[in-house]
Length: 143
Image 1 (cartoon, helix red, strand yellow):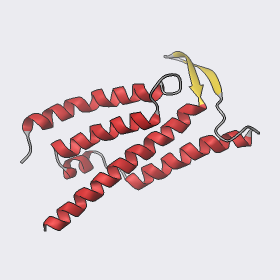
Image 2: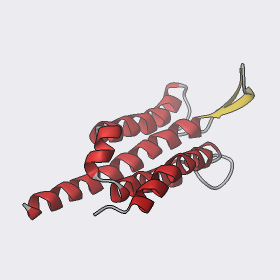
Image 3: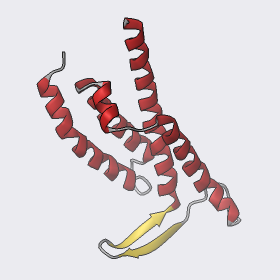
Image 4: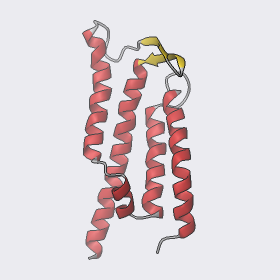
């Protein structure tokens, strides 16, 4: 039996936690945070949806293939490190650039952001894959 209060609160918390996760992700190369912590926070927010609603509810609204998410994350993190080798630098050597974007103005882009995004995708994908696999096994064992 699902709790109406938990389901309602979890739906309200999801965008708040997603925005805070984005904040942690973007400040990660200059302050504490980064892809790992942001990924854990996003995974926790999505796991709250699994607990509060149901696996069918979440899978219907978030049709992700977690294995593909993990693979893209690994490619992005590894590709960020390997890109430095192309330019004759050490693996994962940090580079920065300043770009002017129309609405945001001057934005600092760092290679650490690409690596953090890859770590973020791997953490979210792995956590959700583990939980969904355990939920499916429990459902099959109950039959």
